[in-house]
Amino acid sequence: MITSSKFRFFAIALSSLLLLQLSPAISAEPISWKQINVKDPVKPIELALTGLPAVTNPFDPAQADLWATIVTPNKTQYDVPLFWYQEYRATVNGNTPWSTAVGEPGWRLRFRSDAIGIHEVTLRGTINGTSISAPTYSITTELKHSSQIQISGRGFQRDNAPFVPIAYNIAWANRHEEKIKYERWFKAASAGGVNVARVWMASWDMGIEWIDTGLGDYTKRLGNAWALDQVFEIGAKYGVSIDLVLLNHGAFSESTNPEWFGSPYNAENGGPLKSPAEFATNETAKKFWERRLRYIAARYSASPALFTWEWWNEVNFTPISETDLSAWMISSKKALYTWDPYKHMTTTSWSSAASVRDWSPVDFVSTHVYDGSDPIKSLRNQFEAISKAVPDKPLLVAEMGSGTTSEDPFSDPYGLHLHNSQWAALFVGFGAPASYWWWDNYVDPLKLWSITSGMKKLIAGTDPVNMKPDEILGPTRTTALLLRSPEVTLGWIRHDNYQLSAKASLLLQAAITALKTKKPMQTKFPDPVVKAEAVKIPVSVAGNYVIKFMETKSGKAISTVKVATATTTLKFTVPKFTGDIAFRVEKGAA
Image 1 (cartoon, one colour):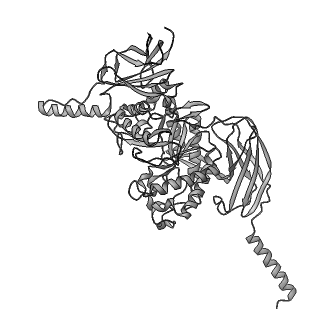
Image 2 (spheres, rainbow, N blue to C red):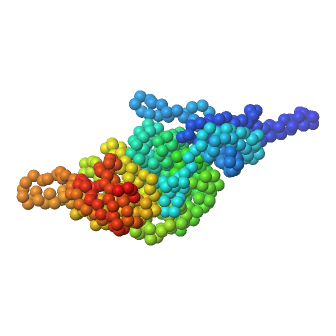
Image 3 (cartoon, one colour):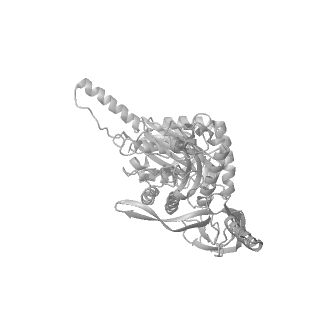
């Protein structure tokens, strides 16, 4: 028998138990900040936050919505979201690189240091519906990060100087080998003048959400996020900025590199979408996509190495309509800028941008060109088509190759098509040399990273995108291209047979000759030699000029000549060369 007094006791006890189960857990540990990085310039300023109540899913803003207000030494103020972090350690098991979780996960905050001095950090937000705050925390930074790359007309600038992206696609590594391989790749690329790499958050490598995670909880892929941290740090170490590709077409394609079968958005896997085309319009999908976007921005937007966010790789291979895509990019950018206080540039890519596209939602154009023909011709056609549609934004060749299935190391072991693509893109009017694909099975094994050295030396101190492309009559059987400004003229002269498709034609002709003559077929052809010959170029004013000739791949100086002219036409002799040659013309003493 239960008396009334006993009943009241049990009722009170039961109520207390229910309150304990339903109320947010309160940590006995005081909320406090810990400095993780304030000195290393390849990393953002980083703090850890401890003493917060636990949540079931720290990636869900409905459970944990934490922000820091940063007041800089210059008294500017902005808000940055915190993110959930797990430390890892690169290890080696036998001959296989691996990564192992270290310690307990927790909350982190990252932000840029735009000035040396005191930054004030104020916490706000909610945990399980309960408001969270902490006293303002002051941190004295000992470094100033370089300013981020920005749009400047039809080009880019950094620290008030022109920035020309000399880039490669270095999109992924074998899982758990990122730290080893990107260290090797970025070191070699940087030595050759490369300053941008296009990196993917692909499902098979550094993507943080896939069928193994489900939607909205990235716990199982925090190792991938840590690997991408390493890539950003290695990039900053070697001066290689990252074009981060957030979505690849295969993840939402059933036809081209299809991965839709493994997508957590697929209804077959418990997701909200019956078709990948619905990704841009379905509200549930949008909610989970923006949750992922928030996490990515919180974790990487402060990195000194971030160049730009790229929404999609070759989105035309998905069934998303262009109208839906444009609206999706606009809404995604609005959401992104809620969490990226630095407002980094955005772009996207189609497999070809020569046809009319809606580029209005992004800051610059990224086209892809896979063509084995002469890049001077193919890229000139691309540039003319795109620049008519988009006359006021930077235009980049973000992927280039001779074919879409592979790059043949036997027919082109010295990177001739790679070399021609880089030079042609810049000299026909694009905002940078073409960014080649096939980094892992062609460029790196054949040690072709240094091929950009000559380009870097030629354009140093200039602003090529704002120079006028021009063409002159060159030596016999050559194409002679110029980039002109009032102060300097850059020149590139190339023999018409010094390109991959011409070599293929020579092989074909040799095969026909061998069949006719029944003699062994000629398989090797020396690079074409161009004899010394006079050329004329337009200049701004009469006077004395200095012309410096250099090798195109190495940038090695060939010769320097001084020439005077009484008109606005400058005549000089191009020395004998093999394949191609570059030159730079500037005003100087006689």
